[in-house]
Image (tube, rainbow, N blue to C red; front, side):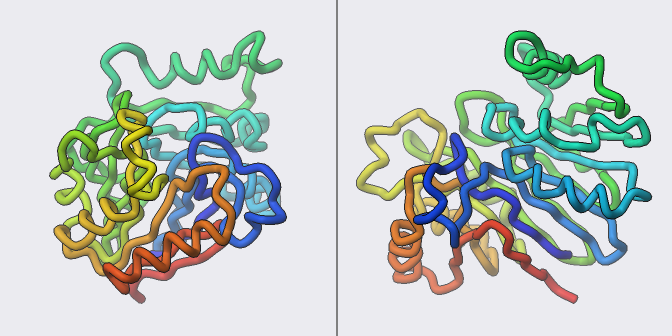
Length: 273
């Protein structure tokens, strides 16, 4: 299994790329590729537009599969600018948590509507298919086995345990442990070969952001160690953090656990053979 980080920021894309070019400026989007060449895309932040050239250069790959952690704007804002949605030959499948108050289709209808965007969802040329995911029910999506598990966030939000090629990757973004440690995250990450965990804050900052739905690097490490995951990638960085800020965070994290790295936009991670 191969992982590529297309966007690693949280909340909004980062300004002033001159001080953030190593880490990257785009919001959450990760591409997974299994050994059979099947592709899965996690979230649709601004990093999604990086795939426009790929689909332009590989016109035969017409089925595209997305899995969303949740529907906050920084995780779906790349969708209106994703070139394949305007081309008839594409079949786009969007899998998202089963939300109690509204459907994922309604979210996208609102996103792509006047006065927010000039093209409505129903006017798109591609075929868009919406699917809801049930917590704790494993589903196979384009060659990947996906196990969804809810965790603490202001709206319904899932972490994912993803298996392919006898390897396991866990995706835990937009998760908070402030009032109580969320043990469900340990279940999601248990024994994984690699994991991503929200690391938006330094511990000293955390109290003022209570109930925003995010974590510190220390909490990410706690999940990693309790889950006995082999490698942790910090993720969902504050948009105002510079590269120096993030490498300072990494240095502090490595004092606790040496098997921690920064998720950096454009990086490829190979898990297993």
